[in-house]
Length: 638
Image 1 (cartoon, rainbow, N blue to C red):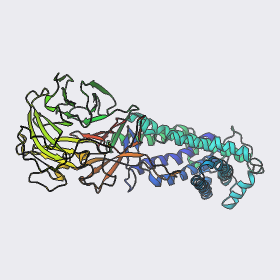
Image 2: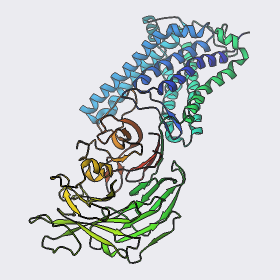
Image 3: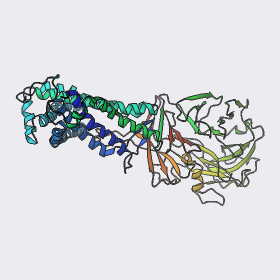
Image 4: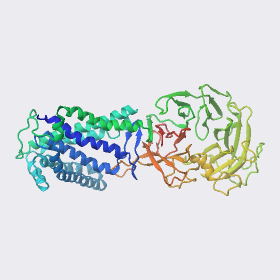
């Protein structure tokens, strides 16, 4: 029984494109050097294509169009004809790519020489380039339907276009080029528009189905263009009701089952993608974006709860593990650097330290604070907060002291010689509760420098942590010198307090750089611990519960595969989380997170390479955000 032409074309496209889609999924699971690894982004599988995929996909696309032309036209053995014509079609594809490359190179040369005439040159180049592309495109139907190969096919396309170049160009522009460009634009980054695995599978299915429709449209347009070539009409007039005289053996055997089986075959890649996502073996990245920037203070992920995001005057509880749904709690204190910060209890309680004020919100989000603030912090220019393993509130303060000022009454070690320079006193304050009515104050000592930030390039940073042995450790970066000083105690009760510059001679009991690295104080130390000061230092660092280090770095966001760059502007950055064996991170496995262009506001253009916030939970999941809350990223199984 004769097979309708549409059914034969569907079978041909399925036989070509479905295996390619399956190969793209399976091949994307293979780790390759220099290529982003396969991952799940917002519930959608993202394969690792790279340069190989960029080279192979145009060839598969051209073969699919060629085979569809043969299947749509009344010719025998369409797949066999398309395969025999493939070398000639490949030559036409290379000729078209070379023409575009030369045109872009010429345009770039003119752009560098005389930028004002770039549009004039582009218009002058467009006409001959379009004429050549039309002739190269018509090589496809000529090679399949007329049986011409090599130079004969190219010669026939150049001769046949004469007298009808404009009409053919318009038809190929809207019927061949425009659908391909729209397809590439619509499915460039589909993972950014999905929110759960089901939508991810449907997006993959829609991409495959749309590709089949686009290829079928391109084949039909090229077939019609071939029939309108002057003197090239070697085939009888196309009758849409006339069946193809001889389809491929597989199409003949399937008969009426061709359409349902073809549709089922289209579902195979989407089903495979759904299985890969459901297996939960790949790194999973969830990106939540916001259009309104706001300053972020801290993040945390307590055990048994979702992530907690803290802003200047509020904090949000993530009601699910992906942070899609959140509940906001407003605070009565305002946190800002260098005065203030946030700490978190094991039960998810939040401690917010503002200027001379401390507020606590328990796990049920009942908040309380002292009405009169914290008198113990008055006069200080910087403060920080953390909690001891026993739940005691530990505050650190830094205060500028004139050289002639007498030493305070608190117990303190002998201050080092300071000369005529100004100096800063660092203190550790222990509070039994949020009201801190009976604080215990210990002066760690004084260091050279000032807390006045003259040019805003090196703001004051003050952190307090508790190391593995229970000792409080305070780190201060002075904006006047850029130097970092470390204060420490021998015990949790702060016996034998001391303070010293980190780059000076090491004193007995002073934390080593490796011990400081374990406290995740990299945003104070910058590139001093484990990294060179070459711009590649991490934006944030945290230690994994299972051992090793995670950090977030910024790197140029180069497009995947082959690309052509026009202009000399800087690349946008992208945030990448690296899985490292140690802080030096000499051998890292990177997982792309999100593109991070500069934050542009009415008062400044902030660079993207700023400090990020990061936290992990006991199961090894990670939450990180940029300093303005534009991207909140949750990573599972990094």
